[in-house]
Image 1 (cartoon, helix red, strand yellow):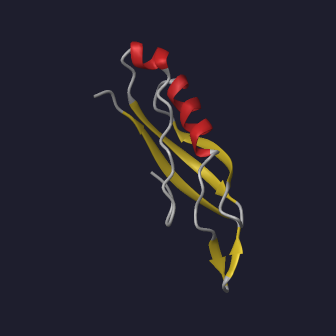
Image 2 (cartoon, rainbow, N blue to C red):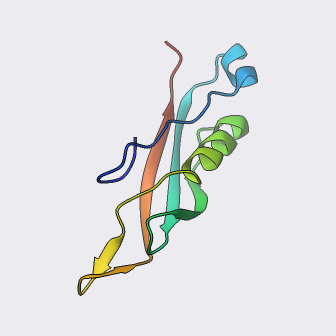
Amino acid sequence: IGGAGFRNAGPAYPEMARQRGQQGAVVLDLRVDAEGRVVGAEVAQSSGHPMLDAAAQRAVLNWRFRPALDAGRPVEAQLRSTVRFRLD
């Protein structure tokens, strides 16, 4: 999971959600600063399970991306990312 040039850790699966058999995908709109850090994460489409949505938001705030460039200079950017929760 993650941005170009980085391997970002997936979210921790909330134990209560696991016990309840909850699965789903959370679509997040991310704001990434000029240093490649995620500085904002809003749920654009819920998984249908608030615990999974919250876990996804917490996880992406630790992610890093290669910064977007404008005329060769790093700039803040926005992107959409999907975090999936699956029980195997």
